[in-house]
Image (cartoon, rainbow, N blue to C red; front, top):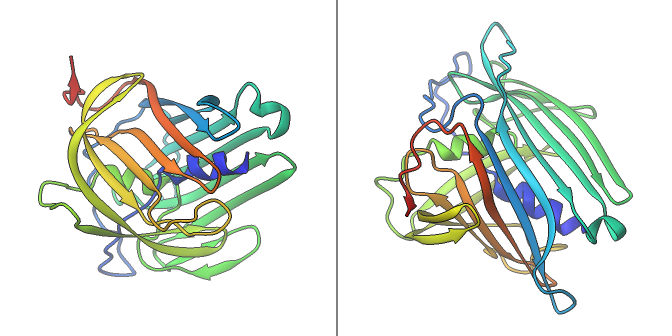
Length: 265
């Protein structure tokens, strides 16, 4: 179902503060490294089904270092595909990639390859953060400083400090998708514990604001759990949709930058 692909790509957002259009910010990466690999499983539940495995997804930072504007980058990939019964009536094969500046954590190139049933969407977006512009296959437009794509936003979020956050504090977020810049909010819910296939973890909980309509009938339908350690890897996502609910959980991980000391034995 198309809802599953939209939910899977909703792991993602950004936070930005730019000082000068002629210089890139310096945002150090404390959370991830090249070679990191995360694997997820998607469940769907409704009056017609009972927690079917609807798909799988992977999130990784490859070993590639391609330069843009003479600057080193991280190559990041998010892939999702339907599985089992869902392949019969709504086959999904989605891939999103981003080349992200190693020092500023802003994207230089975004790649989208979407296959969802009969729907096909391909795009390549080139960012110029010196001029604050983005050029897709269909449009060139101005963008706010430090605008992320939906992949780089995921990794920027993992590098944000949560030490000073209080329950119900909000983070402003913005990202470019389909030639439009979106601004949303993420509410910090606090700390707790969450259990997934990969284990039981101490975790941080967040609730992002989503657009209502085809998939969501509430503004805050989703809760995302992130490991309460220096890696800040997403552990679980629970979301209501117009028909049923969806859960995405971590099943495997490799090559993390820091020990996963949030895991409870």
